[in-house]
Every structure is written in C-alpha cells, then in structure tokens.
Image 1 (cartoon, chains in turn green, red, purple):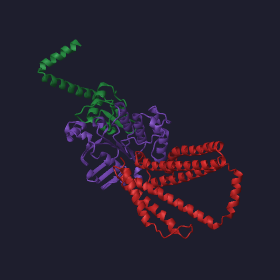
Image 2: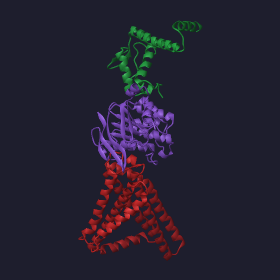
Image 3: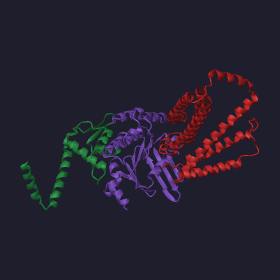
Amino acid sequence: MGWNFNDSSPIYQQLCGILKSRIASGQYAPGEKLPPVRDLALEAGVNPNTVQRAYAELERDQLVNADRTSGRFVTADGEKIKTLRAILSSGYIEELFERLHGLGLSDEEIRAAVNEWGYLK
Amino acid sequence: MLGKLLKYDFKSIGRSMFPVYLLTVALSVILSVMVRMRVDYSKAFTAALILFVSLVVGSTIGTVVLLNQRFTRGLLGNEGYLYFALPVRTSSHIASKLLNAIIWGLLQVVVVGVCAALMGVIAGEIGFKELIEAVREVFPRIDSETWLRLFNALLLMFLEIVAIVCFVYLCDSIGHLFSSHKRLWTVIFGIAIIVVRGKLTPRSLSFSGRAEEIWWYLLPVIFSAVYLGVTWFILDRRLNLE
Amino acid sequence: MTTLKCEGLTKNYGPVKALDSIDLSVESGRIVGLLGPNGSGKTTLIKIASRLLVPSAGRIEICGKAPSAETKAEVAYLPDRDYLPGWMKVSELIGMYADFFKDFDRERAERMTASLGLDGNMLLRKLSKGNKEKVQLILTMSRRAKLYLLDEPIAGVDPAARDYILDTILSNYDEEATVLISTHLISDVEKVLDEAIFLKQGKVVLHKPVDDVRQETGMSLDGYFREVFRC
C-alpha cells in the first residue's frame, strides 16, 4: 500500500525528496496545485502530519507557496526550479562519482565512461 | 440509555423465547386434540394433566436457562466487549437484565395460563360457557379478606422469584471472578449463600397472608438488594473479560 | 488536548504486575503506536482506558476525566477478538451503534459496508472472518470519537485487508482525535504512526516521535524495536 520508503531516514525527509523530484521533473508543473495533505497521505500511505512536515520543508525552501484558502502551489518561479534541478543533479553526480571511485575508477575514467555511455545510447 | 438497553435485551431474548412459547402453545393444542380423539373422558383428563405439567416444566426450564444465558453470555462472555463499551452505567446493564427477566418470566406465566385454558377447552372438554358460569358463581363468594390474602401470597411469590433471579446473577458473577472451574465456584458460593440466608430467616413467623407480616416481604427485598449490590460491585470493579 | 493521561498507573493480577507505574501523555491529532511483545501490558492499558478494567493504583484520565460511562461515549474501542453477536444483521448492528453513540456517523458506516460489497441484511455469523473484522473496524471508525483504541487491528489478516484497514485509519484522520494502535506488526504500521510507545513488561521504555527514532538511530522503528526487545 502506498509508496515505498527505506528504513534509514525519517519518512518526511524521504517524502520531501520524492516531492522535490516531482517538482524538478515537472510532474508537478510550475504553478500547479499540490494535493491536499489528507489526499497525499492516503496515496502515499503515510501519516498526515508527515505530509504536513514535508510540505512545510518545501515551503521553507520556497519551492511551494501556501495560500491560506486555496491550498499549496508549486512555485511559478522558473529560476527556483532550475536551481532545484541543478542541486538534485549534482547530488546524483556526486553519488555516481563516489560509487565509481569505490570500484577503483579515476575521475578521468569516469568522464570517459559517461561519454561512451552517452554515445551508445 | 436504560430504555434503549431494555429494548435490545428484550429483542435478543425474544428471538429465542418467542419460538419456544409458540411451540409450547402449538404443542398443547396438538397434543390435547390428540388426547381428546383417542382416549375416553376420564383418562383424557389425566393425560392432559400430565401433558400440561410437562409442558409447563419444560418451557419454564427453557425460560430460566435462556434468561440466565443472556446474562452470562451478554455480559460475561465475548458480547461483554460490546455491551460494556456502550456509554451506559453498570447499574443500567444489571437493571435491564433483571427487568427483562421479570417481563419474560411474567410472559411465561401468561403462556402457561393460555395453554391451560386451551387444554381445558380442547382435551378436558370444558366448554367456554361453562367456564364463564363457574367463574361467575365463584367470584362473588370470595370475600375481600381472601382476595387480600391471595394478593399477598402472589406478591410474596413474585418477590421471592425476583430474589432468586438476583441470586442466580450473583452466583454467575462470582463464578466470573475465577479463571478456572467457574461453574464449580458458582455452585459452591450458591450453596453457601442459600445456607446463610436460611440461617437469617426467622423460623418463628408463619405465613398466612396477613398484611401485618411485613418481615416476610422485606426479606426477599433486602436479600435482592444485597445480591444486586454485590453483583454490581463485581461487574463494575472486578470485571475481567477474557 | 491531552486525550489520554496516565500517572503511576498500575494493574496487578495477583503477584503479576501487568502495568507497572505507567506515566504517559498523548495529544490529539496523533496516530500513536502502542508497541511491545505479547504480555507487555498493551491490552491491559487499553482495557483500562475503555474502562473494561479498573486500575490497582495510579490515575488515568480520558480527555481530562476519569473513566466512566461518560468517557465511553468519547472512546471507540476495537477489541482483538470476535465480539459482535453472530445472530445480528449488519444493518441491525449499525442501528445499534447509531442508537447508543451520538457521535456515530451512520451514513459513513453504510457507505463503507456497501463499498465492501456487503449487504446490510447479512447475518454476522455468515460472514467470512476477514469480512467480520472489517465490519468491526467500520463500526469503530465510523464513530467520531476523541480516542480510538485499536487492539491488534491488522494481526491475523491478509495483506490486502491490512492495506484496507490502514487506509481506513488514514482517511479517518481527525485533528481532534488520537488513534492508539496496539500491535506487534510494526513494519506494517510504521509509516502511519506519528509517535511510538514501547511497552516492556508493563513499563514504558520509549515514547518518541517516529521521525526522531529514525533520525537518532538510523534504523527503522521495526529495526530499533528488534534491538530493544532482543531475546
């Protein structure tokens, strides 16, 4: 039931991460209305307070704006979303480098492998 | 809340009692018709009498058992989880079970009366007209003092029966306190209470239905109150549903 | 609002201490897990809160009041057993709950039984075990109570039914109410909980938000539970 979460970090943080990805990818489009807390809680299979906390974080990061009456909306500010995408991407890239370092590749080799992979695709 | 409880308890007893009463009446009619058709008059009366007695005993035992079951299953069994979760005081639970026992007990008496009348009419070949004439003759001959004594006797009988019901409830509740051998403890305490009551009953008084002998009436009332009080304490403070 | 408060709550069964001086306070708007192995006192605590048992010592308050017939009107208790009379129909039970509980949402109960494909005219004893448990849950969750006490609501139930039960609990969420779920199946309910209470041999050994447990231990609630209660 609901979404899958791992065991190691608080669920609200993981939920936050999922929502950020959705915003970055455009699944939640700029200016789009986010699901109400209860609906998202039911969909994700988590406690409504958890959703509340995740939304609060997004608001703090100014990725989401709350309107008292009509709900929560993804920011229409294209710059913020671009920045988010950049932050998430660099996070993945860092992870890639860490893992491949762990396999013994050097930075040069990593870049070459990425290029090759890109061409083959 | 008590009213609602009474309603639900009444319905729940009704669904088992009603068929029993219906069966009793039906049986008394059927059997007395059979008796009338097969046997000659003098034997018919005896046969009908035996029939009647067995039916009365049977349905009375049935009523008693079913009423007691309502108490033990409804409050002390799994259903207790349902009933004790209702926003109702423990005293109301006991009152509802007791009042229902009285109502259904009286209904039982009515059913027996109806069966007796039916059997008399059908098997005993007592005509309805003759019955009314007999009543008309006898009633004016009964003076008011005799009526009073009759009334007092019935009242005493009623009070004693109520006391018995409260006694049974108390025994069930005491049995509930024990986790094993509940029935055994119920019986032991039952006997103990009977013995104690016997010791406390004054032997010197004799009953003749006169109004002055108030002690005779107070005794079952006091004992009922004590039984109910202890039952309440057990159900309210010592309840331990499994 | 503090819906449940215990101070030095103790319950003895002869020499056995089922609850040993419990101090506890639970606020509204939370879904709280009452977690512990069998025999740790979970059911005893729940029964005392619903006044099916009286304490041996200490105090307990439901919404600031001592347990009574009055507080029973604010508490919705779902026992860990088959407690409904088999001879009653589903519709009769709904009627009975509506009759006794002012906060019972009859429409909701009827809607939910319909959505399960159950006919109100069905006798309870004719229902499958799973359906019977769902009916018990529906009756409990259709109350608009202040304190819900669910004793092992998902044990002995198949995974699809488990999802249904947790979904029902979530969609029933009320800011003014507390839901206390007692279970030993922690990984199933963890996502749904705000706070966790660990009960060990009648004592409270933990009472924390689930997020804090994860943050501080780096483990899931289930994982941490296994550590704390390692045999």
